Each structure stands twice: as C-alpha cells, then as structure tokens.
Image 1 (cartoon, rainbow, N blue to C red):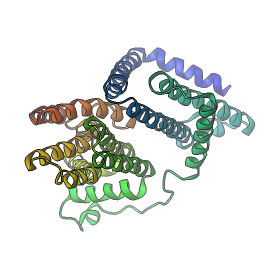
Image 2 (cartoon, helix red, strand yellow; image 1 turned 90 degrees about the horizontal axis):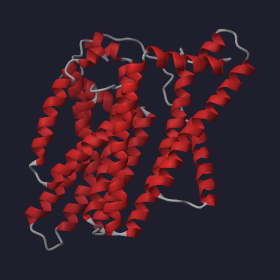
Image 3 (tube, rainbow, N blue to C red; image 1 turned 60 degrees about the vertical axis):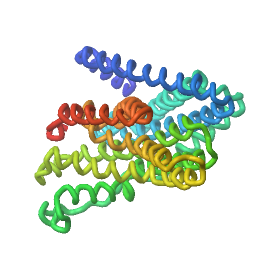
Length: 375
C-alpha cells in the first residue's frame, strides 16, 4: 500500500505541475549532456593524445570517485527520508501501520535507490571511463557497499540543543555582523558539518596530487585539471553548508541579517577555502620554478594563473547560490562545474579572461539580489 501511495503521489505531482517538472527535466538533461560532452572530449581526446597511460590513470581515479559519489548519494537519500517529518516512513508510523509493512517498504525503496545510484554510476564508468573485469567490478561493489555501512555509522547532525540568545550578545565579540557570520560558518564547515569535512578532505588529496604533478614536471594540462578538481571540491563545501544554513535562515533574518551581509560572509569563506586549496601546489610551483631556466616573470605568472584556476570555483559559488535553488547542492555542483570550467579556461589562456569574470560577477550578483529573503 505504501508503494502504491508513493507512486500515486509522484504521478499526481507530475500531473498538476507538469510544465514546471518538464522544464526542470529538459534543463537538467541539457546541462548534464553538455558536461558529458566536455568531459568526454577532455578525457578521451585531449589527454589521450598526450599519453595513453595518463588517460588510464585519470579514468581509474574518476571511476573510484564516481563510486564514492554514488555511496554518498545513496546514504543521503535514505537519511533524508528518515529525518523528514513528511516522509512516507514517518507518516506510516503515525498512522499506525505495522512495523513489518514499514520495514518492507523501506527495504524495497532502499533496493530501488541502490539500483538507481550504482546503476547510473556503472553506466557512466563503462561508457566513458574503463571496462573492468567482472571480478574487479564485484570487488569494487562490495567495497562500495561496505563504505555505505561505514558512512551510516557516523551521525550527520548534532543532537545537541542550544538556548536562544539575543543577536547583540552573539555579535558583541566581533567588529561587525559579517565577521560574526563568517567566523560561525568557518567553524561549521571545518569542525561540525561532516559533508563539508569530507569535501575538504578530497580537496586536500587533489591539492597534494597537483603539487606532485608540478614537482614531477607533468604536462601542463594534467596539473591544471587536478588543481581545478581540488578547488571544485573546496567549493562543494560551501554548497553543502548553504543547504544547512537555508533550513534555519529564519533565525538570521530575525537577527536582521541582510542579503548583502549573507553573501559577503560566504564570499569571505570562499576566499579562505579557495586559498587553502591553492596554497600547497602554488608554493611547490614557485619553489620548483626557481631552479628551472625560466624568467621570474613567467614563473610568477604561471603560479598566479594556477592560483586563480584553483580558487575560482570557490570564488564564484556565492554568485550562484540563489540563481536556481540553494537548497540543492547537486544543482550548485553542476553550475559551478560548467561556469568554472569556462572561466578558468579563459583566464588560463590569457589574463584578459579576468574581464569575463568581472562581467559575470556583475550580472550574477544583480540577478540574485534580494533572494535571500525568499529562500
């Protein structure tokens, strides 16, 4: 009965809001198809022409990353249904449904989500990346399933409650309201939110990989791409934190936080995360270039370009927060990836690409002005 109820609710939602859902699906497919085209051209054309071995290494790394994303997506979908008070599981329990029926519904739904998440992941891996032997596929799937169990062991939210305090008391220890908001979000991102911590950890790994590629004098496109991925994961920490902040945005609104202050606090945090991701590879490039037969100007210019490429995804994230839906990190991830790739390519090709970034910043900030109050 619960399965039939969920199916009917899905059909009714499509029927009564068909135009909106159709537009969302079409736009999502266009963005996803564009991403696949750019990614396929980069991996199977650009990198493959440079080195077949490099292409194989990148494909293996992206395959492992895809499986990790499938694991986190699966756990997050299950967790959201357990915590939401309007979920079918919670509603069935309040209506007096038997525990056996609820467990059966949860099991079937979990199996469907498991099949969708990992089916999509393996389709992407086999179609665009690598074709592993069956034994390796089975082992990888077993490891991914064990990783799901490991992720579910750790709580995603703190169960502690705190008393409400006056806004003047909260901001009294800081020179401005923006400084207080920035300090609070830095603590949340680095110390409290497990998703942002995982995202920053992956960013650190790619940052170290970028530094190693620079030291080993790898092809330019290799360490530039690795650096961009490092900055991209640093920007995802902002998207995950935004999702949490918007759930309780009423508190900041009651404290008198304006749209400009909200965006300014995230802009400061984005400069921190972007700089943190770039500091290791840029430092290694400066140190190794001093021993090479390059001019000082050329060395500094390339190092600055690498710094911009790594920090760019975090920098543009506050400009895209309220363009579509800030509550969905997946939408933020896609928009930051597409726009970040375009702007990073333009800037690395020539410093005049900064003009494109300034134009984008102007129109992006104007188009989302005041949307914090409607979020």
